[in-house]
Amino acid sequence: GEAEGKVWLCWKRARGRNPADPSGPYYVVTDRWQTYTDVPVDASTLRELGSKCDEFLVHGVENEGKRCGILEDLVVLLGEHSPVPVTYAGGVRDMTDLDRVKELGKGSVDLTIGSALDCFGGSMSYDEVVRWHKKENP
Image 1 (tube, rainbow, N blue to C red):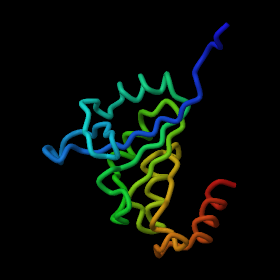
Image 2: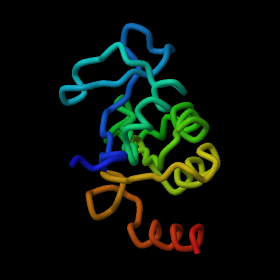
Image 3: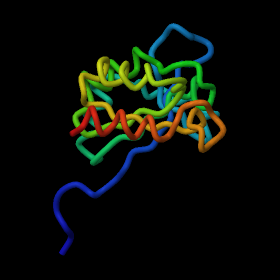
């Protein structure tokens, strides 16, 4: 027979605001962040997809790789409404962004850092990030 329950799935869809409405809601973006869908990122969508996924990996499309700061309103939305563990990626520029994600996400949003790390050519010390993580998550 078939196994019952949720299938392990990490929902990795980029999210961004439609350039036609930069102050509007976030939408799921597909095809290497080129195609904006009509699926809004809101409490209802997170709840529906959360019933089918074990975790979310969310990219802030417009900030990805730019080291210009996190999308704070998106982190708040994820912290308030994600029913499953969620990791945010996009725009991290320095150590203050780690504190902001923890605060805005109410401790329930994890963070991934890429190009901002020194090992990838950025200015953030990998060792300092590890120390921060150990201090904040004893």
